[in-house]
Image (cartoon, rainbow, N blue to C red; front, side, top):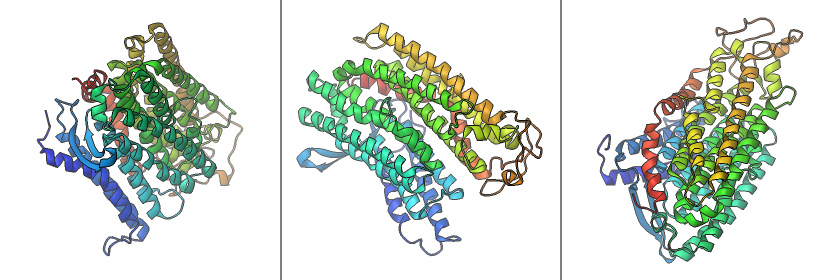
Length: 555
């Protein structure tokens, strides 16, 4: 069933446009604005250009989804297959199925919302031209990663996003941005070098880099030893990007230093490239190798779940001087642990749960980083002790709508039933209860129990954050000086009705949610509710494709 019947040639064009248009837009962003399009100044013109290009890509992606045959989501659609380097049998092979389509939509949506947000709230840094160009290159590389079906092209697209993100952190980030950017690039590049060796091993031993042909072969053309080596090599590169404990240490620094839109794209899109590689490459192409490493992958995943939660609890406690952005970054380590646990089960239930958790994490954590960025702009800091103790009212009393939305995002992140975060975690735990044949059931049930304990820890630190940031802490003896009471928001506060504590001289108002912020954040909140109440929309796409991948290309 297709919502609108679109011809195959138009679908091919749309997918190629989605991948290439941001790259062309990045080049155009560096050129002088044509007469009549300059707006009030050149900076505004290039920011408007970014919104226009990302908006066009989002519309094209939505049309692609509308024309997608939802009755056959396991079939590659909108495919293009052109010989590129005949000597190596490298082909420009594009296509989408039920696994990659949701990730394309998520990437296009988040990038557009970031461009829209940046139009009104550009982070401090060098030229806006370079900022817009880097965001567009980042979008092109991410979309290509989810659309290409050739291993070498996948590697090139996978690497394409590293340089733009490095510069976004290093040039537009906050404190310690240079060190954080270097740590990000070193970790990911070293992982990528190892991953390339694994990709070359598969291509040379099987005679092809075509991901569809390799998935259909289901590892029959590769010996078990080759599969084990390939999974180890490629898995390290993917695990760094995911990030899997203990290869995660670059993530908190990168998130803490990155500008708001950089954090949104890093958490909402870039982390998904690693888990997507596990599902698209390792599960179908090297199943025997995955079966060998699945228990270890699951063990690292559950350690990451508990470790990330404990780190968040440590940051959230009173007097720890914890940074709220850093806390959300550590929460990503735990949430991505659930994704890896689902993949390690090698079952349709677990892998579907992992893919659902991927999308849910992108929506919820993307919204959280938007909100934390807005809070930091208003308060001038993301330090939890300052946010909680500066006034007795905190967000509920100073910016009630902003406080309510932060509480909503936090509750969605802890996995409340009825919101998107619930289904992915539940399905991955179900998958761990009954893993694939050949995997130790007692071991995986132990992992399931540890993962379930991690959900309790997640609820604990998220509720502590809501209590401290939204409700504040009673500090009757604290008084703010006139300087402290001055608004910190760049655009100045606007009076708004307070909910909770009544504003006083010690509880000055902050600017509540602005119109442009509502435009950028509302789609994420709405989709979080929609995915939670109607999970069949997403699972109906992913399940047939996952069944086919795990069955060796047979529907």
